[in-house]
Image (cartoon, rainbow, N blue to C red):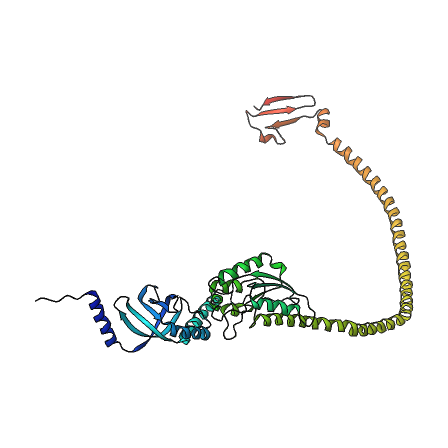
Length: 432
């Protein structure tokens, strides 16, 4: 059986016809924009993708197009409602029709967009960043810093050409109270993809000399609301949250707070509102100082008058009290002199008695020494009389056995050797 072959164009035409017949309706589709390009005719060419939420692997992809007549209305509507530029990276809910072209293949033609879906995704992303900062314990660090009483040295992060920066400086310079503020601009890009990196670099420059500044003001004015996406990043938020100087934000976004608005010390709507906040803060400080000055000028003189009267009353009482004290001291001195005199007399009597006793003890001691001396002489004579040497000289002898004196003859036995000691020498004998 023979088959008539189809050309590629004929085959694609059949596919196009089948798609139109089988999918004639419009469909709402959730997808992420991975590419957004606009050509010279005003047509917007898109690339839609779907990724696996766990592995981030690509699951599906499709080309899309927004014709210029639709894009002229759709883009500003989306950006006005979301405050977000229509750029790659967004999650969108779009109304599309499915088409297939013989030359360009499968594509989706966008006819409408629902900004509330993107707003929900953006809000979710903000919540995730804020939750991460809270888990890291840094979410409220900048808010907990104490705003100095005199916030006059101001580091400003803004675009040098921004109208809001000029309004901010003009508001400070022309304040009705004549307060003096010292400002220095740290230039940064305030819209587009460079917002995050540019502001972080400015913060680093300020932090290098943070002792010179009382407060940091991040302001933006004159830009589109859709350029605020750069203020909703984790890196910028964590830098602001942990910055050691209070941060005031006034980036011109009235509907929703950006992430850095949430972590900053104070959030105001516009640059002029930021200037007004600083002026009012300084005015409150000035009011407190005026209250203190009023106290010094009014309350202090009255207090000093009261203290003067109190001192005069004390001075008036001093003579009588001094006289009474002198009299009391006189009485005390008299009592003390009497007690010292009596104590001295008693001590004299004791010492006199002791001296008399010492004389009697001396006499008694001399007498006792004489008696003991005579007794010692008598004992010496008796000891000499009983001395063995004296007895030996009189003709007596001492017989020794084994070095001991023999006093009983029965203690000797035949054959025992004994030593006989006489006045002059000794001799040995054997018992028979």
